[in-house]
Length: 162
Image (cartoon, rainbow, N blue to C red):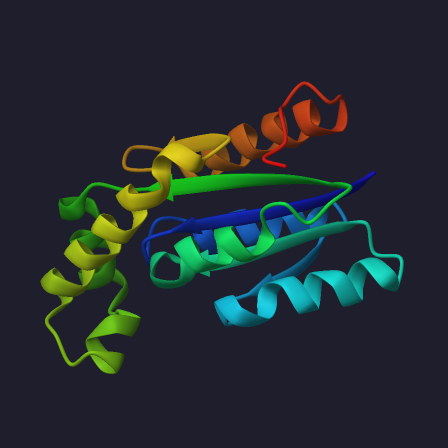
């Protein structure tokens, strides 16, 4: 059975760490694909025989990506949401000196960008098969939770969104 997973959350919540878990387990990972292209990309990869696919999306495109992937037929589609408290996200951005993507694309402050990301994330959290609050987690703890989730997926213990 083909496994397709969408992972989303606000910038800075641990999406890159999650991406590496899926790559290590043989998933073909696509990061930040435009929402309108996730379904055609998925269909093409499935036709090529790639049966484990993970899309990683910042909060801005998660809702539309979710809509475009849901109901694709005979795939096991699951959705993972990562989230982090606003204060922790601000701390992470200031400590790493990374620029929040929305500060550039929308010309807004880091604080406003983070608030918008969290709002976008909360709009789709009820759709998730797995929700992880990464505020106090170490990278190792996040990885362990994702490995456990994928173990359950492989054993068909986790319901699909189809």
